[in-house]
Image 1 (cartoon, chains in turn orange, brown):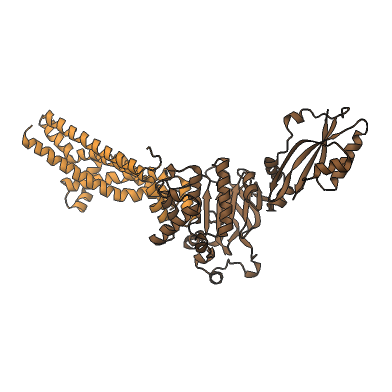
Image 2 (cartoon, helix red, strand yellow):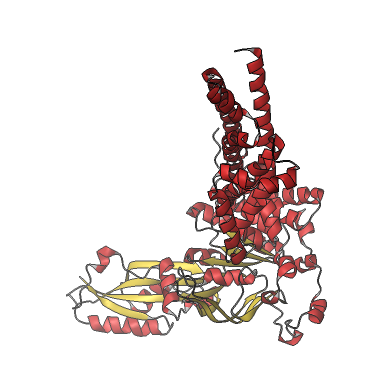
Amino acid sequence: MSPELINLIVQATGESLYMVGLAALIGTAFGLPLGVFLATSRKGELFAAPVVNRVLGIVVNATRSTPFIILVVAIIPFTRLVAGTSIGSTAAIVPLTIASAPFIARLVEAAIREVDGGLIETASSFGASPMQIVFKVLIPEALPGLLLALTLAVVSLLGYSAMVGAVGGGGLGDLGIRYGYQRFMPEMMLAVVVVLIALVQLVQSAGDYLARRVNRRLRHH
Amino acid sequence: MKAASMNVHPSLAIGQPIEQLDAISPDTIPPAATAPDAMVRFEGISKIYPAYRGKPGVNALQNIDFAIPRGSITGVIGRSGAGKSSLVRLINGLERPTTGRVVVDNRVISALSGRDLRLAQRSIGMIFQHFNLLSSRTAAANIALPLEIAGWAKADIRARVAELLALVGIADKHDRYPSELSGGQKQRVGIARALATRPSVLLSDEATSALDPQTTRAILDLLANINRELDVTIVLITHEMSVVRQLAGDVVVLDAGHVVESGHVADIFTHPRHPITQSFLAEVIGDSLPVSLASRIVSEPPAGGQAVIRVQVRGAGAGDTLVARLARELGLDVSLLSARIDEIGGQHVGSLTLGIPLGMSSGEDATTRTLAWLSQFQFPAERLGYVA
């Protein structure tokens, strides 16, 4: 494989990491609080607001059931508003974020729900405010689950990022389609797939490692 | 060193004198009505859980009116579903009564909400059956949690946590996570955490139900020490009579949402009136005869056999010399067929099963004389039958 092609792969990997990294970061910034709220706003819970909970749930489900490629195209005006352009890696971060935030929210919701309700009662019994319960009990206790959720979100984002080539987002997926498929270069397709597999393995291993590190529930000596 | 720092009256830690509360809260009790020795008072309490999602509503508590004396260890005993958990959660404001009010340390806790309630909750500690420790925090950090929530300075927290770990006897477990501790050690952490903010009341929700008997005993001893040395009023909910017997001075018997009996443990269990109380008592002293004896009892007196008489003994020193005196004063060769005597609140409670020899002809006479003699002690006695 020529140095030019290798250069292309390196550049595309950089674009993918840039898009996925920022989308995961911003997606978490929205998804984490949303997920915590979804988990704690049902009837009788910490921030009980059953109606808001239901409406948010519907919005989250609607976003999650829209196919990503359609979402990318559908929100082009919004993307232009936020990023100033609808083309390129930076613009692609907008749909990636909008797709990942509800996904992350659902994963966070599930992880928070796993926390033993007795701990919430305990913290309430010594006078913790709802916000103190979130930050001192729910999030620390759910941390292993939250890290695994974030790992899953990053891996999914790597998959989604392959589709943003449709709006000139670049990245590994785009490279694979343009060179590997449209220019009949199977070795390029193979290289892209190998790099993606390596990235997913890396992210998953790192996530697993961190989740294990913070999990004090069962220690194996 | 502990005593000095803990002698501060817990109510002072809250920083709200009662006079101030009088001024701001219409629900504050007028001083005249305040029983000075009551730490917790339930006044006309009922708790109804409304029907929800097809489940019928539940009348968890009805017509609850009683007081828990300051400085006491009060056991709240009842079967599952009797309303114990609801009752104890009314004390620290985790639940609100449907009617009536709950007064804790002269404050109407059932009228508080939000920040006021959270401040008041700092003077009420609670321990749980399943310990409810945060798995992500070490023993020390678990104990620190209520102090962090109360906004203590880091250095103060560190000193207080060390003091508490020593108090509950696990100073060496400072950096251990709950998953590395035994059940008894976890409950010690729970107790230390509950005492962190120097509460005046400690609520125990089946705190020993998940522990083995030996560990239970050690934890109950620890609670007794805490009650004595720190002057903390302890409210124990339990379904185990043995816990009440070992620790409590006062007892409240709950059944189906009603208080069926309450008072000093010794009084309640020496003269149990309600069937549920009697059944709890039977757990300790037993009300059945040994199988080998029960199977031999017949209804007609056999020649040369014995009448079987069961005597319930109640009271301080009851029954100590009963058999010896009976034998001496009536001149009978009394035999002891079965006996079970235990001590509850310093009072003897139990039963003796005696064999009274029928002799050659005057058997009925001996039995009658025995029953008459026993009646002077006001111990209930009955003839169960005869054995050969």
